[in-house]
Length: 125
Image (cartoon, rainbow, N blue to C red; front, side, top):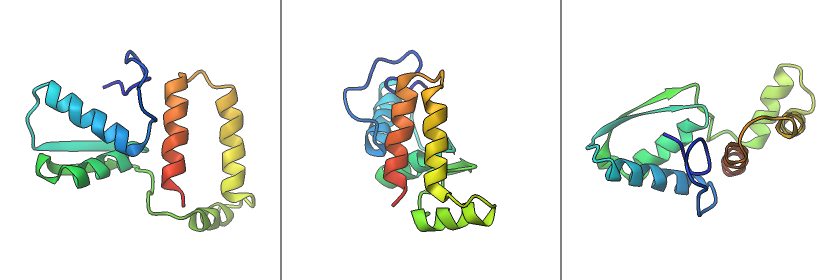
């Protein structure tokens, strides 16, 4: 499905937080008449989305499939240690600069960029 502000969907009226994305998915499934319980699949940033959906609506979820999910429990310090382990001294700061440079040249829709920035800000503590 196209989340708000992405693909063919209208711009979303609320910021693209995990809570709002889960609320949008819940409303979509209800409007579509799709009955649960569901097996939700989350890839990358979708991992935290389906985990939160399951936490908010446990009776509607039969299972989760996580495909290379974002590590939503990893702290900034732990992530920096992983970057250093693979030889990147700048850690998260280096990654953020690289992503900002790629974002500036990106062909991604504005909605995708906004969602990734918002979710990333929620995940890393």
